[in-house]
Image (cartoon, rainbow, N blue to C red; front, side):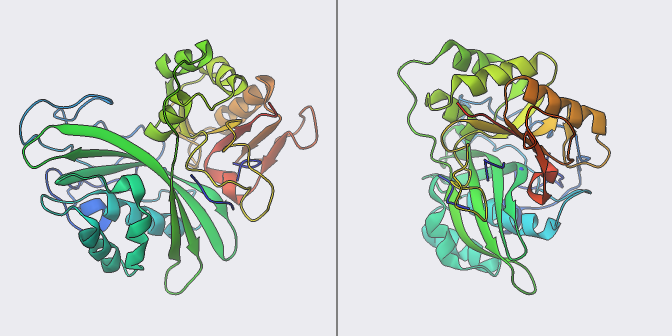
Amino acid sequence: MHSSVPGRASAIPRRVVLLGAAGGLLAGAGCSSASTTAPGQTPASPSPASPSPGSATPSAAATLPATTPWTPGPGEVQPDVKLRAVQLVEALGAWPPGGQGIAAARARVSALGLDPALADQAGPLLPAADRAALQVVDAQYGGILTDSASVLVVCDQWTASADGPVTPGGTTVDVRLDAAQPRWTVTALHPAEPGAPAATLSDAARQVLAEPRIQLPPASQADIRSGAVHDTVLRAMLTLSGTYRMYVSVVRSGHPLDVFGTNRPSDHPVGRAFDVWQIDGHAVVDPQTPHDLVDGFMRAAAAAGSYNVGGPRQLSGGATSQQFFTDDTHHDHVHVGFLT
């Protein structure tokens, strides 16, 4: 995110097994039984009992999907900063039967050594439900400076009443942190606010939502359904999907309003940018991901009309001297921005 990256904001998981129907405090209630996913792989599918997006499991007292805590892999810049942000989101968004409510959420936050009042900013992470499970899909920098950071935590969430069906959901949270000892501390949470679905959608929006080669997390799906994403962005996604399978991390909501550390408006909140954290099953942040794959994607994004393509390396060429850029914030994703 560049002309996309602080303002406020309206993560494959490297994992070990946790939370089925119940959970603990840390890492979204995590118990760990080992099933790790190597960096660059697609997140493991939830257990067979888990619902598909947008559906509900019709059985009573249905089992929540087994989830796994996110852990940083190789190639991360200041990995503990991301881990700190993720652990808070995991703790807030998952709880065992009877663990719902703001008081219980505050206790889970306090157990992490963080200000319990952060639970009051959790928004959609705390729906009215008897139990919940949460899986972090990706943790991406919205910005990383010497003493402050924005971590965009992309997650799926499943909730259920005491004896009711499982309902899928999820959101993206812009977690703000400041440097502190012995660990960075979280100062604020800004969950995504995609807006209500539009009455009608453009052809490009419908095609993107239906395209299996474009994977969209819940907040990004909602962004597109809101009608607030420009068709230039959507058409570029479709063009890129003809060559690449891509996993989008953020489109419009859940991203800082300004480029992090500046007062320049970001292209994301106005629907003129998207970020990609995984290409053809390879995480951008993973050192084992072929450079040619990521660099080729960046050049293809520029050819698709992006004026502002950021990624883990500085590329030569480009229509302007600023068309390609790199910095610590963009070591873990490719930013694709548009003027209109």
